[in-house]
Image 1: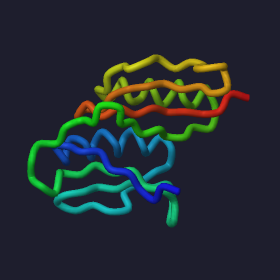
Image 2 (image 1 turned 90 degrees about the horizontal axis):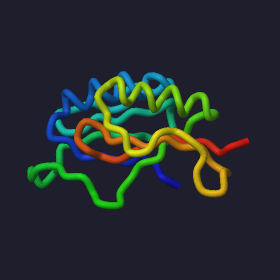
Image 3 (image 1 turned 90 degrees about the vertical axis):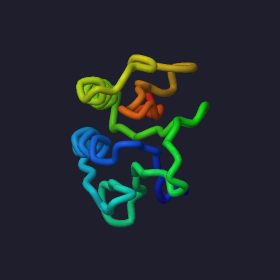
Length: 124
């Protein structure tokens, strides 16, 4: 399974503040923080999400078709977390709601650097 995933950023400080506020909503805190990367997790041994200044020192760009899905407890949590992301300056990529055959509930957004993410849960 995934141990961690990183998203490129050209402004580590700005991204750090965005994700501190957003991921703090699900109990995540910084597990690693240095001049190139910040990683958040909800606890020891849990998967981490990070932002990183590219190692090759070229500008960070978003990957077409790349997306990180973050788990939420239920549809109400998806709604709340999506709204928090938008309030923090993220842009809408698909408002929360049931998708596909209705088996899952998801809200899509792009962070301050244009990386695509979503909050997701299985529909009960």
